[in-house]
Image (cartoon, rainbow, N blue to C red):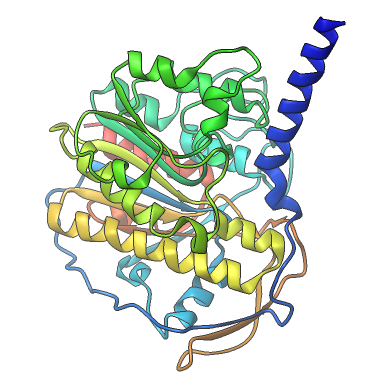
Length: 384
């Protein structure tokens, strides 16, 4: 009887965790009128287009999950005419289809970018036969570069997971968390604390991370103070909240990661995900999409500022897919007003933009497969 109760408890914990991880898929829009009106705008700097050499020492890859052209222009409108993204003079488009579907999910989309291999929806760092495929992050680490991941979702969620884990299904959150212990990643910051501590197997991965010399922090104010060593920042039990709840989590995490990774003289690879542009699309919420698009663009600005000073860093900004089929049905750049409609609460098949700034940026023009992004990054960063 006791064993049955134990099993029931484990299943209940797992069920609650899975629900918490994926509840954004059933979120509803709070803005019935589908309208966002800006209360303020931020200044956008123009950065110089002067770099050192033809190949980068570092790559900062920013993924706006669910970010299509409409999401970008919605953000531009809301910020009254300009985004930091405009500094990226080399622009292309990525075809996002997965190996088994016309419309990809984030797992297959992320895996295509991270490994250069098309795979089935739900796959994390594995090919269509469920064989592990080395990621750009792992390859960079093997070449002596520093590596990092930052996300406004759980760090175990599909996109960040696809750069570091190898699992047949994206829902294997605890297995994905365990995969972090099999790597030498220098810094990762995002939600997902429960997947490291409240586990069915009884392991406490936080303690295991500490044994591997990671500084493990859960408070943003403490994360902010770290500028060297190895860092695991687990900022939420599962996902970080919306912008009004998480505040400057993404900018702080980005600044911290860049400070730590820049200590490596050989260079670094950093992936930063603005996860919740996608969630706004799932909810059919113009407000949600725009507020996260603007948060993401300001982090793009941080990356560009670092690259402009460093002159040896390639900044890439793209998406794994578009979400919601966002259609801009009205607006005013002068007033920062955006009105939109969402014909679907799911992903769509349209091409997504690829923006590039820095040495090697000219490689990312034209129409390409999402797997080409990996091939170009590898050629530029690792093939000297």
